Image (cartoon, rainbow, N blue to C red; front, side, top):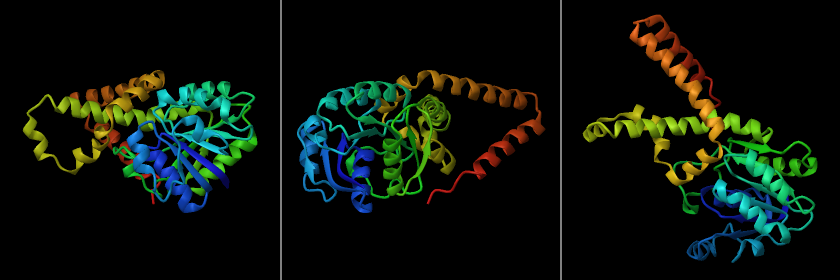
Length: 284
């Protein structure tokens, strides 16, 4: 599909994109750049990487598709850094979990030079680093593709086709709609898991040794990179605050029902929660 694919800042997601592209034949030649020299040395010779560049500009030059996999606060500066070396036909996308600000900045930075079409794979784990990458990370997972109104239709189609080729299920939405969605289904769960663990940490530390699968499953993502999540929360602050207020209203309603011994309402809430969870789309 693409002759020359470039991955900038390959951690878990970026290296998985490269591995998947190689495994599914979505790119003929794959170039990678990492900020850390030691990472560039480690990646050299990997079967999913044809060349390791020393600078972002060198990596992006002559690329057909550039995938930016840096933390969300670094994506904008990276787009600006590579803008002048991109080929006119080049398409730039990213894997950031916040889209509105990134898409507007990147589209303006590349105006008249190349096309930017945002992406966000709903894949990954609490693990970080290219060593944790795998070629089937996107299999059956949703990938948001987030063109701004007026974005080039052909470029959007090619980004959709690229993710589809990696065995992902693509959902195309506008950037601000994406940010509202993920504030509820991704960012809010992270905040709940982290604050639950932070609250329990104030109690007897020995209690954690008694935990069963419920606590472990509920709080798995609390083990995620705190610096990475701080940046995400900064970037999507307004939507996350709205999601938190809605959740607080639900929790307060449940608290009142429990305090008033309104067992029918307590059970009704539990049943609504179960019904929602039972209808999740299975992940292969």
